[in-house]
Amino acid sequence: MARSRSGNVFRDNDRGTVVTLNDELLAQLGDSGLEQIAGMLGTDTTTARNVVEAVSGTIVGGLARNVEHPDGADALRGALDDHVDADPFNGDVASLTRDGHSILGHVLGGQGTEQAAAGLSQFAGINSATIMKLLPLIAPMIMSLLADRAASRNMDAGAVADDLNNERSAVPGGLEDLLGGLLGSIFGGAVPRQGGPYEPTGASARDGSQDGSQDGDRAPDGRRGSDQREVAPGTSNPDW
Image (cartoon, rainbow, N blue to C red; front, top):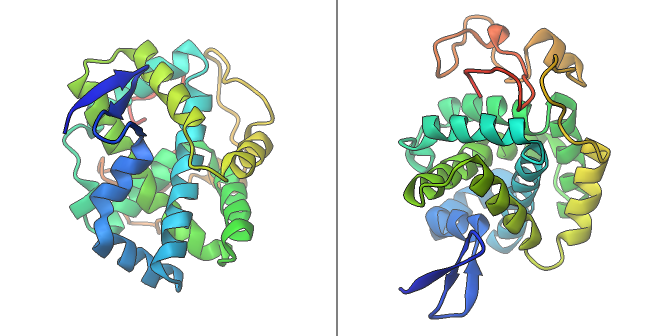
């Protein structure tokens, strides 16, 4: 299949359509993956696909907001190197969820993730607690796809930021208002600050329990869940 670049997003010349991270995500999930997600959500595959697109758009939009500041772009680019060899599409759910909560803590924050779940719940008519289970499953998949894209195209931090901006402009039809309002309520129009301490917005961020793990559970990096804290993109953070 012949592809050319349109900005930093691939264009499929055979179909004349832009190939986005959401397209790649759906292709990787396939019918069986969507059926599993539909079962988890308690709905049909068409609704599951719509929910996955909305969740994907929320995460990509959050990443795009975080890299508006150069330090945020640098931090994300460094983090992508740690996800190049990841295979979240074949990973176990427990590890995937822990990694996903860590990613969401950086991208949306603890309270922001809850806001996202509430907004997506209203959109889909699905319980927000169920959406909260899906968000951390999709987040590592998006990071892995973006990491592979950045590595294959030898993208630096600026190119990753441009790519995410293009992705944000290519959200599936009908989701623009939803995602714009949702991300606006989470970020409030703020751009990540340069340096300085991060100020978590929720109690889960303060006590380090945003990953949902119990005492004794260990994250993929070997640390206990209670030792993990949200850190703003753009600050020194080896665990992004």
